[in-house]
Structures are given as C-alpha cells and as structure tokens.
Image (cartoon, rainbow, N blue to C red; front, side, top):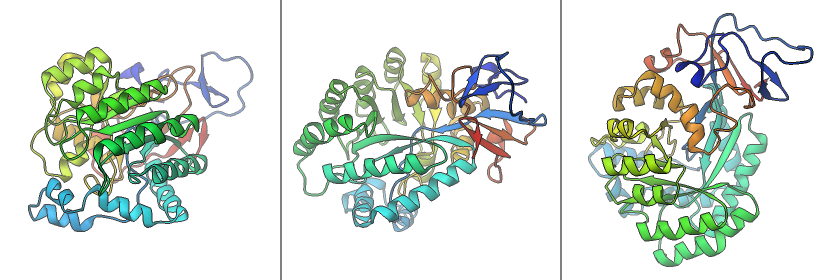
Length: 383
C-alpha cells in the first residue's frame, strides 16, 4: 500500500495495517491473521468524509437554475417563494418511502466514490413535526446505508412562510431541540446566518439552547454577505463555520481561537457564479484547518459528488492537493466532531478506507470525472 497525501497525517503505516473488530490496531497485533488484503501497490486512502450535505430532499429546482442562468439572483428567487421553501413543499408532499428510496440512492452514489461518512442535514421541514420526521427517517437511512450517516438538525434553515421569526425560533428552542436531544436524533445543530435567513440574535438563542442540551453547534456563515455570524458561531464554540465567502481576517482569527473548522463549499460558489472567494490565505495564516464538502442540495449545489468538490476546491479556491485531500478526510472529520474515530488511518480508528488504482493520491484533484476506487471498506468490511 502507498500512504495518502500528507503522509502519516491521514494514512497508516506505509506498508500495512491490521484490523480487529472493525478498527485499526497497533502493529504487530497479537493473534492469528484470518484474512489478508493485498492491494497490489495501489494507493490506499482513508474513507472520504463529506461533512456538509442536504442529501434528503424531494423534487428538484431546475427551473431556478435556468432563472439564475438568465441573470436572476438567488435572493430574488427566494423572495418570490422559490429556494429552500420550494423544496420544503416538495418534502412535505413526499411519502416516507419516497424520501427513503431517493436518499438511499444518493447515499449509494457517494459510497461508489469512496465516501464512507456522509453528513446529512434536516432543514426541509421547517416545522417541529416535519423536522422530527426527517431526523427519524435519517435514523432509518443510517441503519440501511452501507456507510456511516451523520445527521444534523438544521431547523434554522429558512423562515417558514407566514411565520414570525421570533416565534419560530422559540419553537425550535422550546419544542424541537429538547426532543432531538432526548431521542438522540442528532448530536449537532446548524443555523443558517444570513440576511435572508436568521440573524445573530436568532442564532445566539439557538446556540445557547443547544449547549444547554449538550448538542454540538455548527453554522452557515458569510455566504452571501458579511453578517458577523462567524464571530458569533466561533464564540459559541462551533465545530465549524461553513461557506465563508465574505469572511474577514478577524473572522479567521476568531475561528482559530475557537478551534472551529472552515468548511469550504466550492459547489455552491460555482453554481451561483459567485465572485467573492473565501479568504483562504487568511485562514492559512491564522492556522484554521480547512475542510471541503459537496453541499449537495437541489438548489445552490446540485452536485452529488465529493470528488467534484475536491477538484473545484483546488481550481477555484487555490487549495493545494494535500490541503484538499486532508479537507475531505482529517479536517472534515473534525468538522463533525469525529476526529477520534474517522478521517485518518491510525490505531484505534474505524477501518474505513478505499483502494485506488492511481499513480498518486494527487490524481484525484487533477482529473475531473471518470474516477472511482477499486474497492471501499467500512469497519474493515468491503461494501
């Protein structure tokens, strides 16, 4: 086996590692080896981690895509009832069986690319009952999927039609999050902080509630404008701040101090034809770890491929191949609060890995399309 890019930082021993009960164990291991996998000198990489997706949805928004190509802005589309609210209507109309079927198909497509952990957000319910429904369905997806599913509660995704913002946030705090925590439906909450979504005060109320309940915090921040959301999220101890196109040097330093991961989403940047790039150099200089994710969703990033996001992160945002590969393994695991068991190949961690017939790991960032691993393993078993 060849180690992954960034050397021992994401890969196990360059020659071999051993697995016991689904986890990597120290070499040499005691006991008899029952099975041996000869990778024939191929590249072995940790299973990829897509740490930001909206994979459970119904319908599509191709008409909005056409409208944006014609020059209409995302905000204008949302203002006339499109955007997230359009998907909410489709999700509410879909049956459980329909949502499960389409979601599992999408999960399988990610797995074929070497993704072994997939974060999936709720957020297309926008009322207590439907958000609980989606998170409960995600539990079913997790039980049926060949890979690990990490659910996130994103009830604060958009303001439901006809609802008062303060009242809806109160519903999230008083009714939804206590049940999410009690039923263990998700370990993490997310808030979309933006002028067309929720403001700093809304987010702070939700963050405070989440922390009281022992839930992790994440946030969409500074995507379309600079709102101060990154600073608020960092102060709340956010695992990650995601998007960050309009983030500042001060935001980068706040994230560094909090240990928050910067999750960059080049798919949305590409599909929205944005021109303001995330401050990658400021993040580097501040010492902020950078993750990459697909942001797969039906509106702003209809890209069901982490490999495409990997390529775009290098080409559009100027990440080095080593940064990008670490961004879909080690740093993505940290964004989920899962550094202890996924993201790298090291003793004690889950044996989630993929075998690639490539000249070098960096080939994954170079070639766009036509790439797939020869095999994928989750907990040491081939899927």
